Length: 282
Ligand code: PAF
Image (cartoon, rainbow, N blue to C red; front, side, top):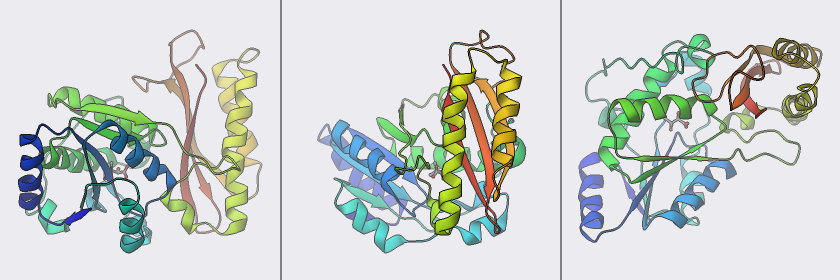
């Protein structure tokens, strides 16, 4: 496994691979890797000759600078994990390497990037599109792997890929959960053991809400999820939206889309830590 810090060196390496006809899979990350990331890397290593993993804590996608400061940084452990997973290249650029000049590009893909995380974290998806487009330009992969935990992010990136005509297959990979049901997230390391136990209720409530679909309206299910989670000490719902899984527009009846998903953000604990999750109804 090679560790590369500059775009020019990365491109030199990948040019050789392309000349040999090797397919390139790409897994973008912000580090603090866990088994969810490991599943993406394993999938890419299975599908492609070469797997590039980027580890870059992208400042432009953090609308709250305290969130950026708190974000766990575990570079040595990340490299150890990646070397055992079939990673060919780890790309770890500096902020100056990725942003030699401030990035003034504006990406706008409503409603995918304007609702939910887009509404509560203004500028977040613009920052995601800025860095993912720069990384796509540097790596030029055949396939790129994203965790479905960030369900909305995948919808936004698909729009960006179509808009900018990237010839890249976006491969969504299933959420990896702890045995308690809690979705794996780099932010989970910021939770105490007690908060982790409490946080497991988020998915429990979401999963149980599927049983209510046959007898309740969309709004009744939405309200009952919010009420039940807010009733658990230590949890506070920021939003719960039930949306068309492709456009992310709100749905009002269960018949209005083929693919209906509930997306939630919950604050957990005293600090508090912001956790996201989702459930597929159809
Ligand atoms: O999902 C993430 O970890 C980040 O948003 C990504 C895609 C690596 C861009 O910084």
